[in-house]
Length: 147
Image (cartoon, rainbow, N blue to C red; front, side, top):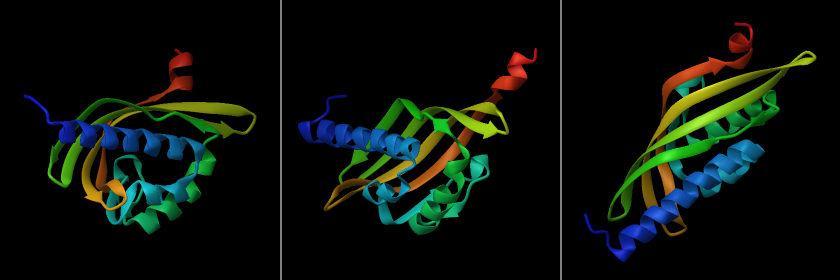
């Protein structure tokens, strides 16, 4: 398959947006998600017990949930993007270790998931208009260390 210059540009712009999303979440700068999602976005984080809703309710949820974690890294890989005009679709692998303080100790969880996305070109650039998570696996590090 030969890609046009426009298709390559679109894919790179979407990929950069996906990396910005991960950085925003890891910095807990969730108000910046307004630069990632469309105003009418539908976001489904229910695979790991999160909310399902619009951008405003998602920002409220993340502002409440993310402070529980002292550190996280959302590492994206195997990014599959298709673009058809002003609409795109993606499936993005994410490896996400997260550290949670529990008393004087720290608990580390590692999550494997896929983001399943729909993208829309807007006057401000590409944005996610629909995102859901698919759970792949969860690993609790202290459980492994106890073996």
